[in-house]
Image 1 (tube, one colour):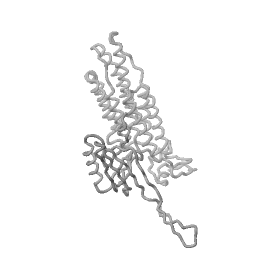
Image 2 (cartoon, rainbow, N blue to C red):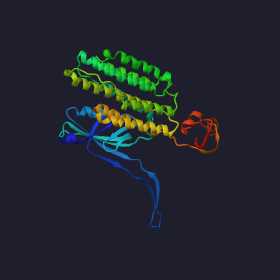
Image 3 (cartoon, helix red, strand yellow):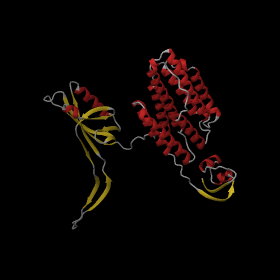
Image 4 (cartoon, rainbow, N blue to C red):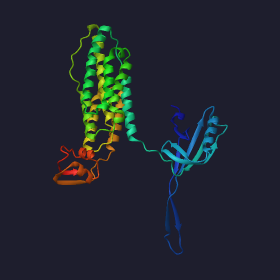
Length: 388
């Protein structure tokens, strides 16, 4: 490795340059007051001094002069900008003064020594919306699962046996989603798409990506819920997530199809790929369904534990690309759900049973949230310690 390669990279206003040293000056603004016939002066501290950042930029090669001129133009731009400092990271600075050194003896090489000073108040950085991040990560996971799907060649007899078995699995998914306790208008579109996949599976399998995309569309339609996504309680959402994950990780036993021995190996490989596609898409869909505002910590925690455990179960069998996307989705889901403050703010001991609607009104929350937060079984007769 040449010495040029060991130089650190830095950048200012997007212009990269080489550097091998820096100097940063810190200090306090101190005023020393000395008085006649007093040995000890009084020190007045006016706070920290502004930091000075000194960096030596190097430009090497046959076009070093053109590069140095371009960098000089960046330094001449008024105002503050981000300096990517090779040791201190990003620093908001202004270019204060600089000098350029080059000689005939060192042809093809020059040094620009720059002193930066703090740039003042840095521009505000918009806060990252954790919900958007979590949705993007779960979508990316679903897409990675689809992109990873492929099938080995099959002749007509083997394909017929494969289609018969895959149809049974898809029917199991349809039944599992139909009893997931979701609003009927929510799941109707998804169930219709799943039925279409089952009907057209022989055609879709001729192009594996087309089959995977169709299955993804069906699962997405169910878990996103379009305009109905806000119309269910936290406990209903928790139950739906639980049932979808259970159907993904514990598929029902089906009658196994038999394939010709000549292509039996490919049949098994394709069956494994199809099973991974279905399971992983349902887990990813459950993760996206889990992204919501919860009214009680119990439902939120149940959903989070279920989804994280399901992802962890699938991680060992995932390809590298899907694995990386699953890890990102897992972290984003934990981040967005644990960010919700669901600690009860008030509590009350109810000695004589009262209707939930009355208690909810008195504690300043809506009845549905009150029932979910307190696991109310009989809304007309609520007793004991309740939380608002």
